[in-house]
Image (tube, rainbow over all chains, first blue to last red; front, side, top):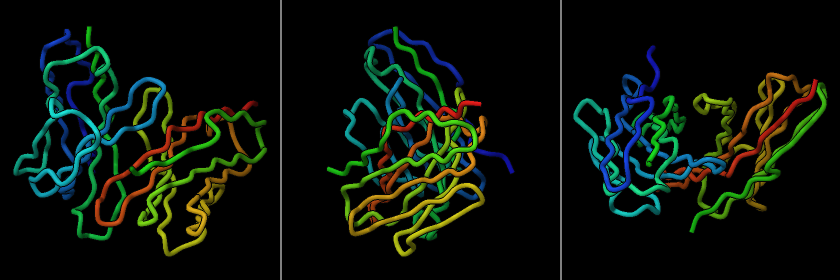
Length: 115
Length: 112
């Protein structure tokens, strides 16, 4: 069974630009979570999508947004990039929220560098 | 707001010794507590988890204990091996919010 995949692996942008990161969950998983992992810090919860809808978001400004597609893949968009947005962005998937299964499986991440 | 504190931030042990990492959570409604291991340059991998209706869970050399009253849970690794060296993260999931709050991580170094 294929795991969670993310693309691209690395992304280099300049300040003020927009970045788009993509995530494909494990087949059968409908929930997708996005996390930011800045150097030396833990995982900061960004967004949670389930069944195509945004269910919850962390303490990040509105320029962090995303969506989930009908095939449950997801996209994270970061507008007006700032230097401090440089981080590893991790995506995780799990079974649908009402399944009683809470286990999250992580993708390899996208390393975003803002110059 | 919700918070998970994790200690220590770094831990060095001799091979064969035990390692203990502790986390304290603030949301009393949290009901699921996973532990992840992240090796350098790799994705976090679930190593063990526990639900709020259980006090302890063990899987070979790894065990997790949960004290709901005190709102803390701990990871115990016995007979440590060099391959246990990694960063370990705890997390707590809020009941109903499905929001996972992660600790800041513990860098474990097992010295051969």
